[in-house]
Length: 104
Image 1 (tube, one colour):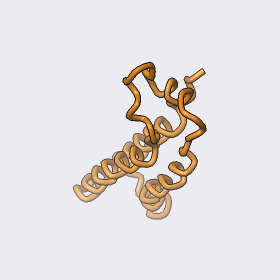
Image 2 (cartoon, rainbow, N blue to C red):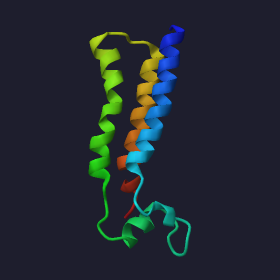
Image 3 (tube, rainbow, N blue to C red):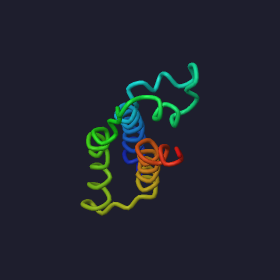
């Protein structure tokens, strides 16, 4: 692993985390912890149909383009790039889908 791959992976990871948070935050998520809204499940049941996750998923998909380019097109299967891709994918899944699955 070269220092270029390491540096670019770290920068890509940080930028991706900020972009995922920006695209996945709910409009009134700042209400959590105030009054009777204790978590994301209470927030989703309290507000009207104001779910914008489908738009956020669409706008956040380009963060995977560097991984597709490096792993599939360039065929560089460096362990650090694969680990970074796995971490970003897991966080993306959590922010957009998994944190809402436990709201019954």
